[in-house]
Length: 288
Length: 332
Image (cartoon, rainbow over all chains, first blue to last red; front, side):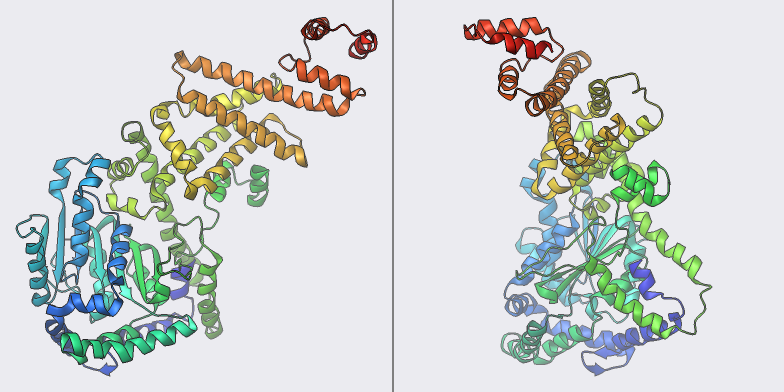
């Protein structure tokens, strides 16, 4: 009923298509609240992340009050990683989600509870893909600090979410945490995700999203536009990047819209879960 | 009641569609927004069987917008497009059913666990990560099995089980036996299944499944009850079924002979209980009847009246001079 009938209502298909394309087009040419050329967007985003890479994790903690850790835990919990899985974490530069997945698979407690054979454990591959080499470097550094520098399971790859270098039907899981907002063409990223996943593979997206609750929305807006850029100035020394961040959140499609985009890419059982009243949403889908 | 109602609704679509309706009552929206609480993190209303009306509400405003703007449209595209929209959604349900069905083969070895489901998914040719999307994972497997068994039972009843020649208590015993025999291959891991069903998150569904099972059995036996009796009958049968199921867990006898003997005894007890209650409320001399039923409750009514009288006399070491009217009542 829902997804396809909503987005492909007969007769209004043309109108719908036009507005659909228009809104996507606007995402491709929007850099926060500014209008930019499509080909420039990825360069601008690249600059943002080059600038923030070193203080990315600290800023996450400060801006979300440490909540981002809980959100990522929830994401990985939903994924239910298993030994022997091939997982791709896109835009996962500093490796937060990847490390959590690694821990979930390799934790001693889990291995004791379940009958996991060592062979399948060896086959586990977690690919961390990011377009920005600075973010990847920070991630590799953190891996080294954890003693995972030479670990075969964690693979750091530089790549573009819109044109992944992985084979078709090669991944059991695909996650993208706080990254799809920065992609120029969302539907291309979704199509790539669909291509790369195996049959039965899951797509999970954690992203800042739209809040609808009346008073909370105002408080959230106030916090976003008044507090965060100044925090950015103070801690990272970069006000513009964080201004871009909060603006890009507003420009991103709302939950339902994004869910219908995921369904259009071909995914089944598309669901979303709001956390903190809509500040963050986890969208999920399965490739069948 | 469930089954006849379902059949009426579907216009005799057959047992299979009836089960589909019962098992997946709401094949509605695939977008399932969560309900937010005052807490920090909310939990999603996952799964397809529990989609709230909220899902439909959020979808409808969009639909009304589109219909308003589509007044000049044609409807030729509607038919094929609707089929195509229904197919992908149904695919996930089918895929899930296929994976769970394949997982059952691994249950005796791996238990009712995610490992069994992942092994099942590998058999079907689907990535094991699909298991992560099942709501209440292990419970999904157990509930699937319970549904399958109910369906098998219904099929067996429909395909002509000889129940006419038996008295009601024997009919019930036979049906329960057929149903419990389906669990025999999984007996080593059945305690785990019971504990999964008893988990607070899963109690509602497992209770509903058992209620349907019990209802089905009474329906097959030819129950014509109404009002309070309907509930009492099902409760008692539910109790008999559950106790037999638990007894079966520790039964080592050949072909579970002890379990079937236990079952027969419990069914007999249930019928005796019914008769005792009837005695208490229906006979003329209530006080005498109460004493009889309370002291001779392990004997059925068909037993020798003489024996009963002596038991009464000898047990109490009293020989009431007014026992003549008592005897008169029993014999009349």
